[in-house]
Image (cartoon, rainbow, N blue to C red; front, side, top):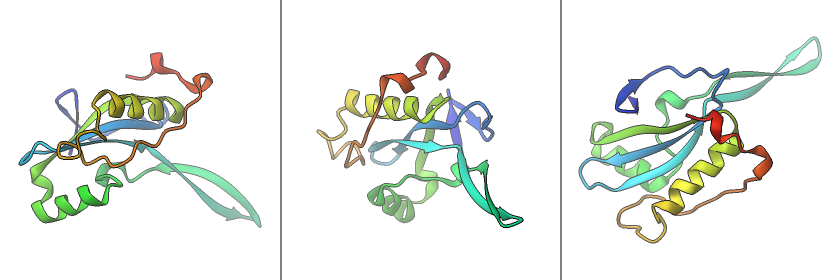
Length: 136
């Protein structure tokens, strides 16, 4: 289950928010992970010989991170020993990328590997794409 502001979150308006920044915490050790997940996926189907793109809800409800170290701990310790918290809902991918990197830098995740699962900060942002005032 995902939490947002301390309350369960099982629905996201994917017409409004295309991504979110999240925090996963190991309840046993306190070790954490900051990441980003998109709420929509683009699929392609062929109609009358032409390829058409369409959007569907992503696998965000069952998503646990791209970190192999974190996924290994979740498999060994069980999902019940971890919390998943949504920090920000974002209206575009640029804002989500920026907020994910900002949280990672602010928390100095690479400097404290014993406290954080994050092993890399990967970000490419353009100020023209930021719409932070529309994120919540």
